[in-house]
Amino acid sequence: MGPGKESNGLDNYVFPLEGRFCDLPDTKNTEPNASVDEDGNKLAYCVTDAPPWYLCIILGIQHCLTAFGGIIAIPLILSQGLCLQHDSLTQSHLISTIFFVSGICTLLQVTFGIRLPILQGGTFTLLAPSMAVLSMPEWTCPAWTQNASLVNTSSTEFTEVWQSRMRALQGSIMVGSLFQMFVGFSGLIGLFMRFIGPLTIAPTISLIGLSLFDSAGTSAGNHWGIAAMTTALIILFSQYLRHISVPFPTYSKDKKLHTSRVYMFQILPVLLGITFSWLICYILTIYNVLPAEPDQYGYLARTDLKGDVINQAPWFSFPYPGQWGIPTVSLAGVVGILAGVTSSMIESVGDYHACARLSGAPPPPRHAINRGIGIEGLGCLLAGVWGTGNGTTSYSENVGALGITKVGSRMVIVASGVLMVVMGLFGKVGAIFTTIPSPVIGGMFMVMFGVIAAAGVSNLQYADMNSSRNIFIFGFSMFSGLVIPNWVIKNPGAIATGVVELDQVLQVLLTTSMFVGGFFGFILDNTIPGSKDERGILAWNKAHENDSSNTLESGEVYNLPFGISSYLSSSSCVRYIPFCPPGVPRSLTGSGAETNSLEPKQPLGHPEPAQIIIGVAL
Image 1: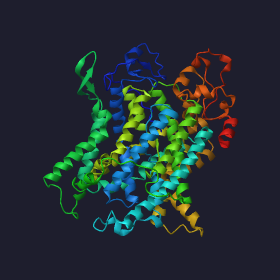
Image 2: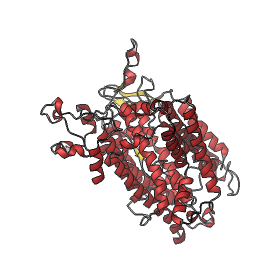
Image 3: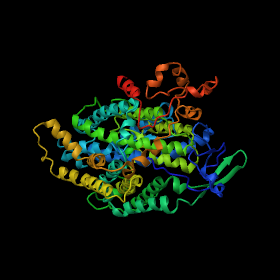
Image 4: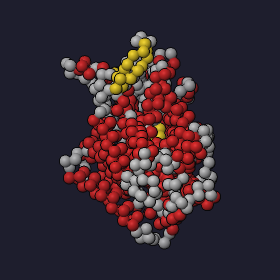
């Protein structure tokens, strides 16, 4: 679900840049006045370039802040299903853990995975099935955990209540991640993409956002005025003020200390909106404008409700594997997570191509995509082992940021990964985020979940929506994805097959909107007669047809680091391993190139049988 963002047409860069410029690979201007936008289609730093260290840190912080909203939103939503609404200290531990794991996964992806400047973080595709698992009767939160006056967060009973639920999620995510690793490292992702098109992706992604409307409404409903203000500020910054630059003091060797124009509102709209609303809530709290009685409307908008959390949180905490206990596995949880993992893989393939286009890299070859999906599976495994309650995926928001900054260097994302690891080690950083008032979080959810729903619908641009066939498939899939889960949730005892395990599997799947909608979209799209052009398959797969896996430029970007590719190229059997480069051109090793030695190109959708066989054996 790559956003496919192009240059915004702005001539000024976000930061003063000193480096060589690279053409974006898909620039095909043949107009007489094409030179007008020539600078807008240039990159200051390509994917293999190394900007100055201070620029890496500054842009690395920016990428962390861009992913900030999505990363902290996931543990805050999960806390409702984990019975942690009134345990802010544990919430801060979860936030620190997800930052730490996201940093590690980012470093693995940039170094050994797809090797593009793409950030890894928590995924909403696993959030829906996770909440479905936690809504099962045996995991329903006890009534006393919903009452702040009855909760003793340090008691053994309360600790076991939320940790048992977390361990159930951990085990399901770990098993589901093994499937993703298998699909990636075996090269089967190409086979998947042959049958999955826009009419499957659109309802699946859209229903992720739509199914979370209850979380957004519950948080925003604690004070609709504060929530509306947060939403309005984010909309103002991201839409109306995005082309307005702000003077910012900068320093360079040539100009010394001077001011530069920074498009701050376009870069950090969510962070600015939350910060302003947070500040206003603080002012209203210290002047006692907001009610001080817990039973009064608007009390949860106060900023002093969790003030002791920052004092209680340790300065330094090291998240470690198995910190919540030994994970448990249930069949229902695994099946539900598999639905989310499948959606995450398809979404990431689109992000890879968008990231390559915006970072000045050739289209990603088969072996790099296979490796990227496999490393994402490894990241989900690490997230399960560490206990984030979620997995990891590529962040579309950060792919879009590449088009704004004009810096496509992967060293910037390496800096982001290191920063996220450091943030995860400082406990008070996570504690600060838990003090954000609930209505402010609700206002952010209103925008974020709406954008996720719209991003899913945007995939329909590839299909012919003048076709009554496509309109029927999409409409029926969307409506079924809303109706069926809603009915099953309201009638939890309706599923009774006589087999407990089967009842649990059906309960999880039928209460996961994205699975229901995606399932109907997949079945109907592949069974109702229609041409590939009408279904959007041709346009959808167009980006995957150019496989430049054995060119000099592609080798510089996608080959394994530290000379691993050169070492492996000496073995003839490497070409049958789906996640290894098929062979390094001799020009890379300084011994000349032979045209006849190049492997024949194949589209991503048609992996070699030998690759699949070797992958299964591995």
